[in-house]
Amino acid sequence: MDFWLGIFLTALMGVSLGLLGGGGSILAVPILVYVLGVEEHAAIAISLVLVGLTAWAAALQHHRAGMVDWKGGFLFAACGAPVSLLGAYFSNRLPGALLMLLFGALMLVAGAAMYRRCMDDATEKSKKNIFVLAACGAGVGFLTGFLGVGGGFLIVPALVLFLGEQMKPAIGTSLFVIGANCAIALWGHRSALHMNWNVVLPLGGAALVGTFAGVAASHRFHAGQLRKAFAVFIVLLGAWMVVKNL
Image (cartoon, rainbow, N blue to C red):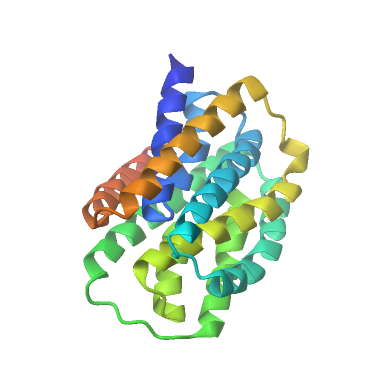
């Protein structure tokens, strides 16, 4: 039962990743730890595999629709991917329970940021600022290595606000950045990468199917209301993780 629930939730993670350009990847570690019983450090490493592959698959689909800014994406990834190794270094030296406590706190912040972005989408104005973008890229890279999250909830608004991207190209670009950060961070977590392929392959397949569905849906309707509901869910899950690990 837990295995099939994990498959279902991983597919939903893929839908969110393809549809919103981020946010969904933050579900990977809780699914692996609390539904499938994977040890915390191994869950972070496996999540980098699942999230990275699905993010790149979705980025290629967005690219076919002309919705990826490769120049901006490479700039963001160049600032973040190397720093992800630093995040992995610290992550490997902390106990799993503390990592999950910090992960829950991050979910509270991520959910609040996603919800606020829903409120401000119509009124925000872009201000090109490469230095702030570089700082955001480094911060996202560190979080990817430290907790195994893609950071799309930060990448998309950063691309819109500080690089002048439109929302849909920012979503596609965010997915490329997530994949690049995950690939580099995975090297830092290689010692914890103990994968049961009988579990990982079905999870990867479910995430890819969900991602393709999410990308297809992203070109057909505005995702603002869905993002708002997802943000509330992220906050509630984060609060539960904080309480559980205190």
